[in-house]
Picture 1 (tube, rainbow, N blue to C red):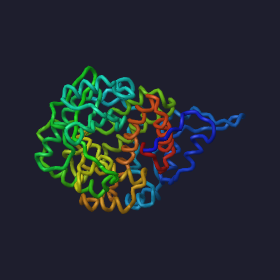
Picture 2: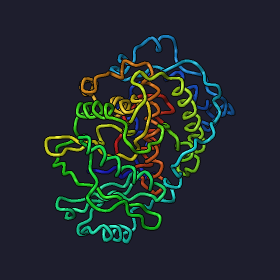
Picture 3: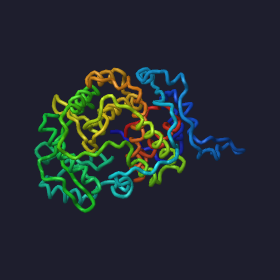
Picture 4: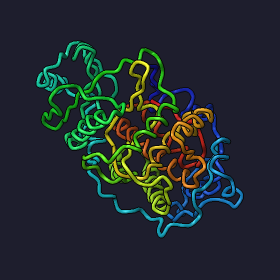
Length: 402
């Protein structure tokens, strides 16, 4: 896969110039979001500087013309209305939410690549062949492929020890789902998880994709239809808490300017205020927590749902919103969203609260980029700057999945 290798500082076209080359769609709440940015004025040297008004509480969004448009209409035209026009009780920074997620995970507790001796020791303990180990991903976790292990290959996920409960839950839950006939990715048949020092390691079956591409949104819609109709699993699950650790992660970030960090924390507070005012027509139940087509895999002619790190009890709409957000940020077509809605049996684009969930998802996607940028990943730093700038402008610019 071709990687974005732009350094943070280089000669030639600036990052701003590169951003301008991308497709940008103006959202109808742009007039409101521009008020959330600190006002600036030009100095005698031609440079822009922030005024003292940058720390004031932003006014709420939306004109009457934008709020009259239906969610379906604005999605199909690449824009979004405000989910509500009522101001929150406070626009000041909220206290960090209580969370089991340690912010250190994003900066200090996960290396650029897991130490080879950790991977070696974990595989020896599990009795797996380490030959030919290949890194697959260095994102929320370090992920490796053992191509000769277990007959058809084994995927190894290495995370912080702080994520030990989550890793154990993922293994237990996927075994329970398999007992109920649900097509999810399955753990390898070894004793796990393996805890080594400050790392926790899990092992999963490998599903070769053979260049078939990501399964369609329609496949995911059918999987979620089945998932949301299963009985309650006999496993303790947390309550869904969108952006629960986001403020903590941003607070310790050293890559973004202070004004961007403060804006993100305040935006989180505004979105959660809106979220808690929503009424969810699909009800509350067992949800995947991070469902989108990128977390599905081919298994021969069938499709499986993977990445079971964030299951919870929560509004079922949360599992649908991520795919709709992909239509705005990653070019998912209206036809794909139609197929997704038809397979699930409900079209979230017709629900007035979808705008809030999409913006929550926008913020959620920043977490891994913050962590990677802090570890010196220049491509992640460039994309992080692009996304934060897009959110502050309130536009519908396309994003890059890296």
